[in-house]
Every structure is written in structure tokens, then in C-alpha cells.
Length: 475
Image (cartoon, rainbow, N blue to C red; front, side, top):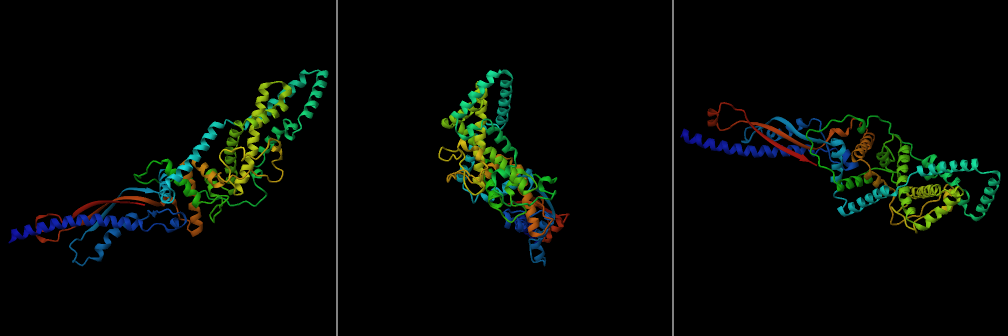
């Protein structure tokens, strides 16, 4: 009977062991899921990011792991086991990878809202802008260089011609003025000097009417992007592809404010902050407008360079300014400067349209072009704007292109800057830190158990048995 009983109890204990092993695996997964169910509601409600606070994570796993046993600790449960030790094998903080983890979290949410076909269209727009910038070949230095060359040419002529030559030159100039009756042509190199002076003025005064701008400032130096951030342990980060970048761009445009879509956040121009990184709304708007002007000037320069009629107009104007020198190289230099000035002036009108809710095409056509060469110097007369293009891009869409052109890590860290500060002010909790939140965890949990069939107790010298199981969870 003793041999039969021992054999029976051994079989029962072996069966119990396998059952406990399965239960510990299940209990570990339940513990992790229970912990991650306690996600930060503030972050979710405002920005749709799921993350849980990593504080006391090991203690919480132990508490959840033991909860079932504590509730059934009256000796009636044959599958009793307890958590002995918890070891974190790997975890990913929201700030890991210089912001890559945050991008993955945001892109994961937006994947349900942005179709891949839509994302492809947006990415093609980015490619279009990049090609325009690479192929335009314009430079604002062309204007200053042309003015210097003209001044140098004038001084050379003054020093070489005789009194009779001076008289003849003046007579030729008078005849030339009669031949050239168009407004800006008659102003000679003053056009280029005027454009130079315009560029030296405040950029916002060029593109905005006199209106009240946001005076909010990012006063804290304790920004996410300025802190030494702890890294997660063995974080599982995927490489970013074009689709993830577009999803993250769309996330930013949806949940952060900008000049044309202000929200009740720490700063009114948050997207502009991502692009400029300054501590005030006004400085961020100024930096963003400057970058938009550069993009639009490149696109407009490319259009003018490929338009034969407008090239001829610029050539006539250049000849009227530099033709007296009889230097074809100088004439060509002035012509390039005029095209650059024309493209810049049209770009100012473009930005005015964008800031007032209109749309501007990436590359203009004859019908969508606004500014005649005669009207360049009337840029500040009133508040003229470029033609609205129904099929063009809005201010927000141009911001999206600038975001794609920028480093993803810089964008991610600055996004967390404004989100953290907004959450602190909105909920009155200065302890909120983005690096304290986890989005992924892998843990090893050691469970202890003891046999309950007494025949086994006599043959085994130790009562402390151990089962180690692993579990992982990610949003």
C-alpha cells in the first residue's frame, strides 16, 4: 500500500507541477496586463498616447502575482504558489532612442486613421519640395552681388569717360528713359536695392498685417530636450520607414496647435516651436515663416527660370539697368538677380495667402502666378496677396512638409517638450515627466511552491521549489 500510495502521490504531484507551471505563465501575463491597464489617463485624453508609469513596477507585478493566492490562502487551493523575485529583462521608455519610441507610439495610433494611400500622396509632396530645392539654383546673394557689380561698373565708367563722353552718355540715358516707360524698369538698379532693404526688415512685418500675435513663452529650462534622459533596458525599437514618418507628421498636425489652428496649450504656435525651437511664439513663427519663404522662393525661381516670356521681361529690365556698361556678363548677373527678387516678392504674397487660410500650389502655373514685374516695388502698398489655389497646399500642409524635412529625433523631442509642459499646467502636476512612462515591458518572474502530497516530502530534501516564467506586454 505504501508503494502504491507513493506512486500515486508522485503522479499527482507531477500533474500538479505542470498545472502550476501553466498557471504561473498565465498569472505573469495577467499581472503585466493589469499594470499596463493603469495607463496615464492625462496623456491619453489629450494626446492619445498609451503609456504607464514605471514607478514601483516590480512591486506591482509582485502584488498582482500574489493577489489570487492571498484570496485563496485557506488551504483549499491545491495550486498555491507565491512570487519570490521579479527581474525586468527589458523595457522601453517613451523617450528612448532619442524619441524613436515616442514616434512609434504616435504612429501606431495614427495607423488606424491614415490610409497608406493618403500617406503616399503626402510623401510625394515632400519629394516634390525636395526636388524643387535641389534643382532651383537660386541664391539671395545674387541680388547683393549684382548691386555691387553695378556700383563697380558705374565707378569705372565715371573714371574713364571724358567730358564729351559724359555729355553723350547723359544724352543716351535720356533717350533710354524715354524708351523705357514701365514703372520698375525706369527705377534702374533701385529695384534690387529696394529688395535688399526689404529683406533686412522684420520678416513678420512683410507677411502679416498689424495684428496681435501670441506673446506666450516657453520659460522653463527643464525641457525634455534639455535633460539627461535615462534609457530603457534593451529597448525594442524598430527602424523608421517613410510610412511611420508620415503617420507621425499627421499626428503632430492633429494634436498640436499652429498659427492657423490655435489650441488651449502652453504655446499657441506649437508646430512652429518644433521647427524653430525658440522659447517664444513670436520667434518660432518668425523662424517658420523664414523657412517657408525660402521654399516658396525656390519654387517661384524655378517657375520663372522655365518661363520664356517672363525671362524676356527680366532680360529687358536687366539690359536697361546694366546695358550702358556693354558688359554681357554683368547684364546676365543682373538678370539673375532680378529673377531672384521677383521670386522673393511673389513668395511674400504667397505667405500672406497661407497665413490667412488660403492655399498655394507647390509649383505655379501661368494662371496661378500673381505679381507682374512692374508691381514688385508695390509689395508694401496695402496688403496684396497671391492668388488662392484650390488645388494647392494650406499653411498647415506646408508645415507638414517642413516637419518631414527636419530630423525626426529633433521633432520628437520638441513634441514631448510642449506636451509635458501642457500636461503640467493643465493638471497642476509639476512632477509629470515623459521619461517616467513606459510603453513596453518584458519581465522574468520567479515563483516558489511546495508539494502538498506528503509522500513526496519524505523523498525531497528541500521544500523550496521554484518555477521561472517570462511575460511581455506592449501597447
